[in-house]
Image (cartoon, rainbow, N blue to C red; front, side, top):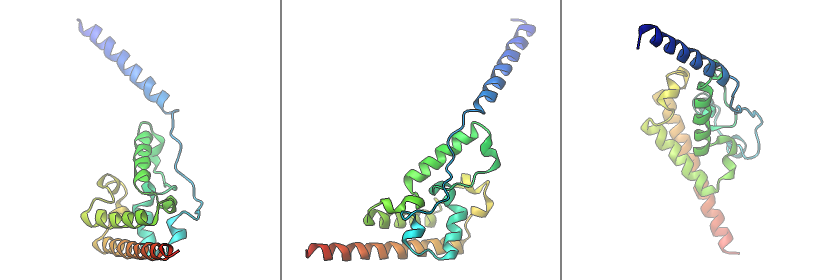
Length: 170
């Protein structure tokens, strides 16, 4: 094969890639934006100290609620698809906006998992904090989340046990 033919093939491949890249810009996932706080929202169900809620808002809610703050690069495909998949997976694991859909034992268990993930450094994800520098938690912020989640988990567990005992007598 001659250099001219190779250049021609490469040119056609590049044009085809550019056309594909242009076309996929019109195929967009639905955005995860629903600012309404419902009765199932954790904020509606349980008191969350403002300091803790601010930490959750900057480090958790983008992937773990129904209200994502999208960065500018979300307008570029295939990045938006990747972000959408990440958000979908995050919400499947824990969705603060629909927290009340879980039973009390599962709510308590999720809070224990939050404490464990933060303590072990699993959350927030490194891939998130690389771009969202403010989401990287200080040791003090981590401890605030751990203490809040542990305390609320115990309160929910105690309520569940008390309700179970009360209902057992009926």
